[in-house]
Length: 342
Image 1 (cartoon, rainbow, N blue to C red):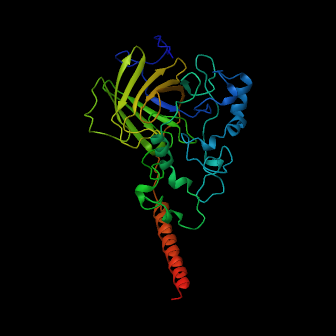
Image 2 (spheres, helix red, strand yellow):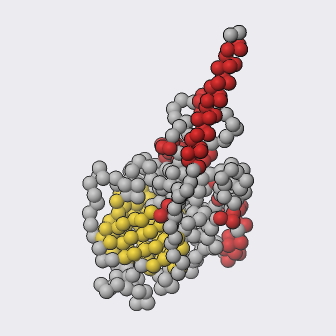
Image 3 (cartoon, rainbow, N blue to C red):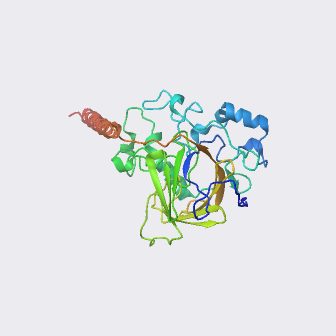
């Protein structure tokens, strides 16, 4: 899909004449990542559908609580409460801020962020990616009935140690920060600081800072990072960012070390930023896919996201699992002794 890259005299520019992207943006959006089946082959929403989406009713109908790109999937959730209200440690809807609506692109409201493939759906995931995505959420989705059922399974259990807990639970990578950056259930703000040689994108989720080297070359393949290695250049008024060298675990659930991401940042006359991206990861999806949505200009700053400050939950999760294991092994030993008549 071609982007409008016509130069505009209305947008702020740096001393060298490049668009000045520096500032704060709100990436919250109620536009679903993928097109709902009810739209068929239609790409855009009507005004009535936009109003329903903004009221929250469409959000509930779309079952976004089980969208892994916005947050951990939960069973029996209540729609907008993506973390399962009533569950121990769960957030209720008061704490969530998924966005207040959708922003038009070229005067139209898309019914999905994904625009390629044209059906608005990502290509089918590979089995490797499906297993990786499930593994990313294993500690979130485990159904705790008071028994350490993982003792009867081969391989590591969901609470064997810190490394077995979900990446987001360890505050290593956010639910939606990516890259690519996708709208999430909260923490959607960004800050861009731009110079001639670098562009920094600060993400509210997990407080990650992406450093983009302008007109540079990628680091050697063996130098890999959580957020990948990003180099950028200008194509007219559009900042193009190419990112490779990811670790095996990425902020894009299902993605892996073969992820190749191309992003395009285009400043609009109204101060908003059009964010366009293309994902190519042949070991995760059976084809590339692209999406776009609007980051809305804001004067609200990005506050620190101190994810684990004063947090004893991880210690207690692991301690509780060890207690369950000890109790279960003692119960089994007692049952075996009783059965043998000892």
